[in-house]
Amino acid sequence: MDAPPDNDVLWARSLHFTHRDGSPGIAGISLGVREGEILAVCGPRGSGKTTLLRCLSGQVRPDQGEIWFNSAPTHTLGPVARERLRRDRYGWIDPAPVLVPELNAWENAALPLMLRGTGRRRAKAAALEWLERLDVGERARRRPRSLTLAERQRVCVARALAGGPTVLFADEPTAPLHRADRAHALRTLTTAARSHGITVVLATHDSETAALADRTVSLLDGRRVKTVHLPETTETEGRAAWSLSV
Image (cartoon, rainbow, N blue to C red; front, top):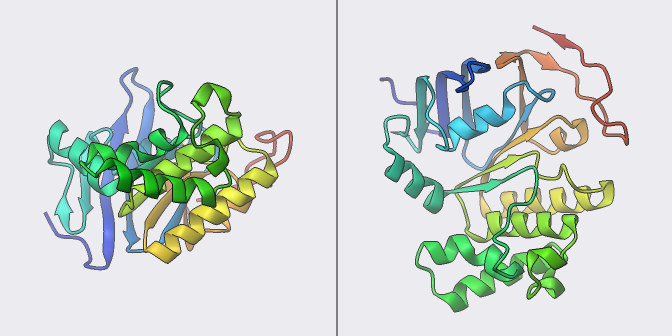
């Protein structure tokens, strides 16, 4: 195995993954992500964006190919080691809010820190800081069922940032938000990433979101292509036509 470039915090070569039902996921994708970079993985729904992020973050192992984090191979790690890597060095934001219903907002945001062994007081302070930045600090003691969809997603963004990850994977992180909420959450996310040196791999099918990134990688049918023209987000999102050049 050839080691990746020193300035790439995340590096992948010739990744292949097929879903259990036999449907294709990704085929032959290679990429590098520099330290502190915000990389947008673009493409329409079904293009392989989520599958790529799940492979890069260690949630699933690729069928073929290599993945390196800080010049160390991760594709050879077992399940326990991959889970530890995700807990200690990675953050993740789903396209829809996933919270523990028995915990209130700040407890959900502090959960990754507490799982690492961080003291409750310190974890709470970090969680509250990010909830305030995302304008949901006053809802910190509310449980998920009493929060709106947008508020729950902001708690998820706070949870991903509170742990101070080296790499943050964001899979359509503002999909459930309205335009104003989406813009605010994205500004907070990108500003925090740049100020804290967090590397971000962001999956999106929205041109406005992709424009916030330092660089874009385009996918179509599980493969990298040269260009995918992303539509502007509208109330009829997803109906616009796609064009590409391979």
